[in-house]
Image (cartoon, rainbow, N blue to C red; front, side, top):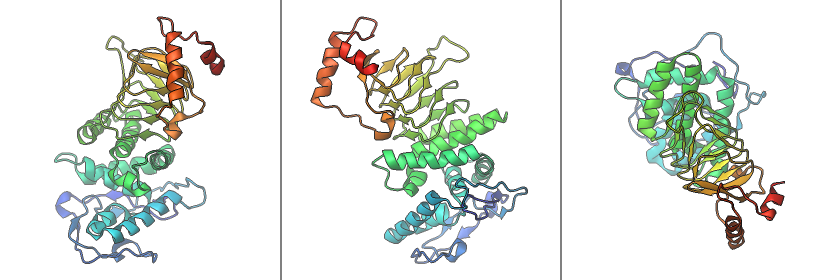
Length: 355
């Protein structure tokens, strides 16, 4: 099956776990000499659970993300993996099996997800088939997995490289597993989608309902404890920190979860309940409980959250600026003194800034 980088990705993993190939290892030194596949030697025995026998799939879909046969993110990931294998030889087998043995990002990511989410009844070979087939046939997912990894690299200072995101950051991995589960949900394969949701929750501690709708360029920073409900909608370029809940009030049915606008920033342990809207470019301070609509490019804080000002940036999610100066806190204090009980501002300065 054709990949974005113009190579062939053969994704049919038909072998059983009883016949998994074993890679026998020797000393390993990654080289940038154009060699791929089994030309790389190995440092130790490593079970490649989900490689199986990769047979061609009929009717290949051309994944021309860049329309040029060139995938710069995948090229960067491979180069990073080679350098990392040289710097830390004990991880050379892991890096080969997870990245360097694959032809494209979709295949590598499917391998990583399959091996992280497998258990005694959901086999890695089965999971890799599922992930590969969905990713390769969905251009939206192909775009999303790249924009998401770019978001992690740009916005999370703890993300050392593209390769570290797809190998180690559970926020990124949980998000991509959700994208596959969401596609399965829309195809009517709801039981399988819910099974993936359950495994992601167990393994990563992140619970995203497969029916939720999530845009591109998303950052789930840390990710632990994030809960996103069935009818939640999240726009593009949103940054979400750990412990965020997008939930219902417990009394509603149907469309009952929050809607998050493009470029919003949700701080750690924010709780947003009900079918309310968080406007584009809004910032919700850590620990806030939001029960009402939040205007675009505004800042809210507190329990319950109150409007405390407006932000100059169009997308605060991109800069991740969550610190505050003394001048800012002075303005917040003035705003609170001029706030009426229902939380709407009467401050002239803030109102002028809003317009």
